[in-house]
Image (cartoon, rainbow, N blue to C red; front, top):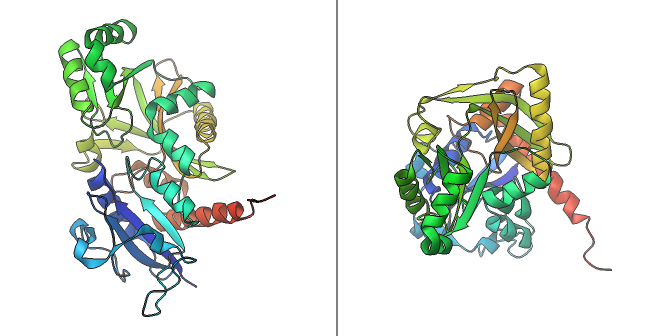
Length: 361
């Protein structure tokens, strides 16, 4: 029996284009003999459009940008208990959803909450872990509680910036110094991130970042190697080999990630056995700190004195041809198609466990 897999992609987010690239790569990797693949596109205005079942991989991103004239749906129509069939008697339900969404309104727990309410299995992290993984400030607070070492940081909201800009910049210079990094608190894929070397760049970067979020996080610049590791599983997570990012630019920005591939990805990263064991332990601790499920990519800095500092976790890492997460698992021995099958299996496993929870007493 084939699994009816819904690919949910697009989204009302600044990372809409990234999601489309991820969805394209996944369609090319799926085994159509094992899955009935149903594209579900959320356009940049938030409308849900369901396409016809795919019989072959999508040829390009444009093929995945479904028009509103095709089949605009209500998300609840995906629930097999509420909508077992359409007027013609055809079963329209989905067995499991793969949310290939990046950023707000997709990776932040909102869609996960909707799927929970509809009792539909879905790949990846739940509401809490998705929300915590999206908000860099909440994430850092949880890491601190878990005893994970990280770079110094400050955070503030737009209202505070408007009222006390000079005081905030003074505080950044005093506590973090230059260079520092300005980031929207609730965004990924390096969107809106700037490296600042002086006050003028700092002010410009904050104004730019506030276009994408009401809250910013400012981090001290760390001199060190950028090391990443993949985590896969539910209650018993396992780690991939480590990878290292060696950007040819100042930092791993959006263009390097998704457009020109102008970055060296070193897999496996050159680490001692002791360093790798330390990295795995910290990565799994971070996974558990956010109550992760399914998959997470954990990003670290390795300083010159051999100390790992956690930077962040990504609860829905990209699956593009340049993406580190599937490449690390490929080098670990799990191919791209096998990785997708494993993630679907983990989603169904977690959903089955939830069905045993009592809701009355």
